[in-house]
Length: 113
Image 1: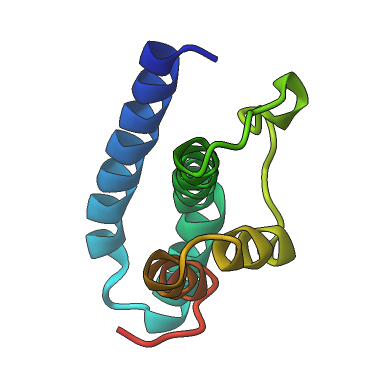
Image 2: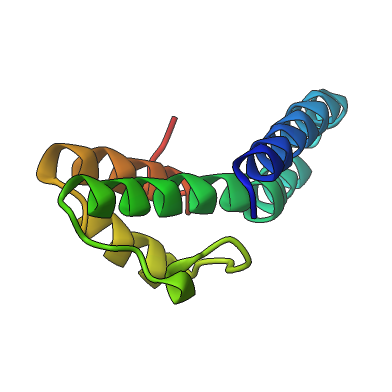
């Protein structure tokens, strides 16, 4: 996937996320439904954004330390599992790793706002 196609995909996902976030205001009166909708949005829209972010950081880090990126390492089509996200986050330098792990935990609903 080219950089421009990747950028377009992320822009579309982000705009979809913003649009759906606005619709959640319609369900403020029903907290249980609002929670379900939030989780659904995280799984369907935010996960691909976080996956792309993590994959880009991993590739960037490998290039910075001089590791050649193999053709098969292109993650673009993959949806990562929770374990994959954590594993890739831990492979990053310490300061960045901690920040990415916080993002992964927020995606999975393990941290409160």
